Image (cartoon, chains in turn cyan, brown):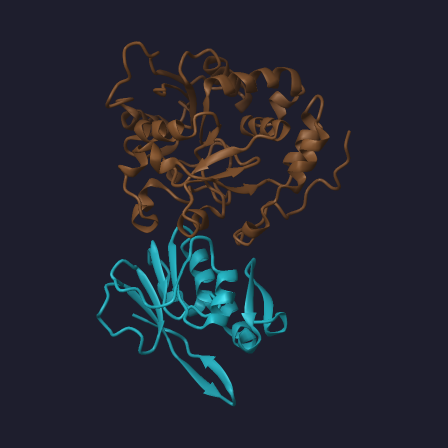
Length: 144
Length: 292
């Protein structure tokens, strides 16, 4: 991914590098992260897994929400993974595929269809997206 | 070499919660060695300084004056508000067997520490100036060298105006030495105690990788008691504080300009990205460096 296709963006003290095509989306949702994930307020988490990590926006949010948590991230797309490596908080383990044992995680973020309800004992954050006029938008997540 | 330790603890005995914390710590620290060293070895020593002083420099002077004369191989300084790993002495012994001749900063709180432990799989990192108060260990002979340096190279006023841990950092800068930090480390702040320094809002006050992180970083508590666990090249994270070279220029009797220049340059760029909660290296400092 060349320099022109990534956009640096400072969010709540953190400098993130985002794909240009996700920039508008990020501008829309990142400042609202606290509200988007309000259902996680008071939820303790030591281990967090992001199954659709993208450029790492949620991981940065998670590192602020749970400063002592350990983060794992799955992102199969090589271009996004390059950005994820630049953005991921210290200690994030970046995986190419879903780990076999999900039971060790306290919170899992995923997209629709990645995790079947009830197959792990964790708080699950399910993001769903839809397209509108050629843009990808995120709905508010379902947190179970 | 069988390591032996002299432990000094400055204790805020006027605070009930600190009294409770110290009692718990001393319980955790005993017995000093399950397998005691041979009788020919010098004994372990303990000094708890609990006079109420007007400033930190009085207790620092007292515990350092005590420590410098100890017959043990190593001196250890711990605050009285810590959680300690079980088998603390065995684990510290394993560390100093692997790294016998360095100052070990037991408060391993660098923002890159988690990356170094988990992704780079390091057992140590070194810093230019990141020794901080909660706990550290030094070979006694090296500590004596520091105390001699302090007498002739640190301006007298620095002893009351520069905190005790920063004095140790200035010595490292002046001598071109590095401070070693273990991954994982074997102590953590007991945050419920609150800071007597007003450091409650301090970034990275918590240990970043502790003995409790074995499930994530793939080690067992027994591993930490094996010297071979602690073998391996450290990563160097450079300077942490923006102002240490400036303090060296200000407070050393005869500042070594080459060493200060080295310290100014000693920034580990690959790890700067982990200062995502704040960046003390890149933040403002006193202005351009002007040699005295």
